[in-house]
Length: 221
Image (cartoon, rainbow, N blue to C red; front, side, top):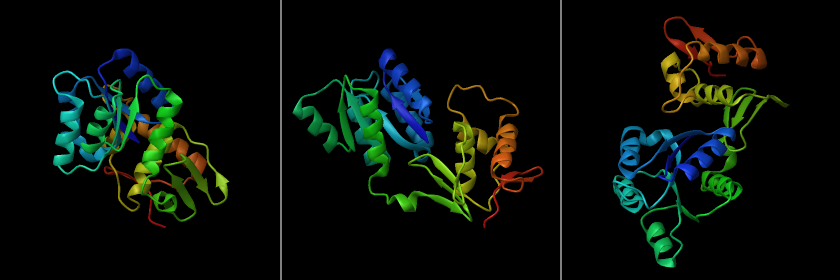
């Protein structure tokens, strides 16, 4: 899942980015409100969650939040800020924040708040991607083939999720690379091929079909 982190403090930003990346999220970190607005304007539907500081340069987090909601975006927003006054919390929630976490916070609590938001209003069973005996649960980050749990790397999981979201539809190498890598990350030339090869070893040789000149597809079961 792609997370947009809008935070100007380099120490906090780096800590959050590192922790969430280790947890398997794809984090795109921008340092000011204007960059956050640009990211949401160009890839609004790509983010599962936004972590938003309020005291940002170029555009305040509160103004950014109001603009995002006025534009009709329903992306989940967790405000992370040092502003702990009740009035600030009320203003953030009234502007459209889904939750509010005051700095300094523990990374464990941040992770728990994120998971709670991602579960909100979604029945867990409905969130599971299924195709035949294959099931992928984005919330628990587990994959099962029949009754067997399948251990996948972070990028193998992301690639499989992308294909399972659209079974029967071929995705190009470029589309899959976009799912696997965040901004500024160097894309290895044969990364998709390597991950597909590994997934076939774990799920079966026919689990993912190559369509020459087009891309890769999981046939609808």
